[in-house]
Image (cartoon, rainbow, N blue to C red):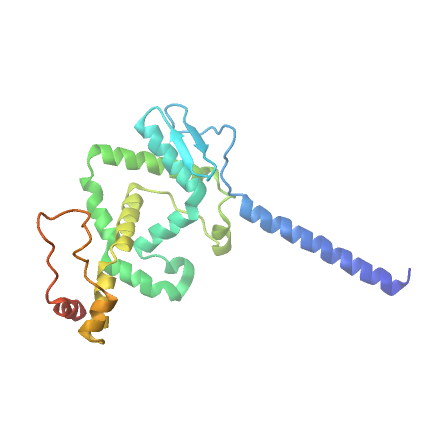
Length: 243
């Protein structure tokens, strides 16, 4: 074998070894945080054994003797599957995304700090009834059990961004509920959008694009009388545009 052939063979072997090592490394980054779905796990904080099984779709089902253990297991399983998503969502609600993503998310942080989801959560927390507080406390304990046990094995997103999740609190769960409520409340967006359409097209075209509920179709919840067609629709849209 000639010297050039030996050199080429050596370089090729090195590249192959490097490629395999890189693939194994990236696979480790991805799978190291996968949830344990078989066998038993000893976890401090439970009052009694809890059974968790996953159906063919991967959806976890929890069987617990008491509500505290049930909520603990729910937090534990949620964090197993979605710890980074949970962390990003609480940061979004607190207006802290830019700590991770830099200047690009400053407008989002400004918006949510103006809306005040974190302030709302801080006001709600002291007013929680004892049962709700206990449930959220148990849930937070389950999330924190994962955070404590997975150090060094957090999802790859934490490694890529170079940080570790902070402990979960009752207030964080409240922030998440407020954030979900905000995301589901799309009326403000649709009202403004419909108002913009109404300001640009004739009324006949508007009613063709956004027809009234037909009188010939039964309503889901009867009002006790014949449904009346809404009057002054464009005026409503103009009011939405004013805000």
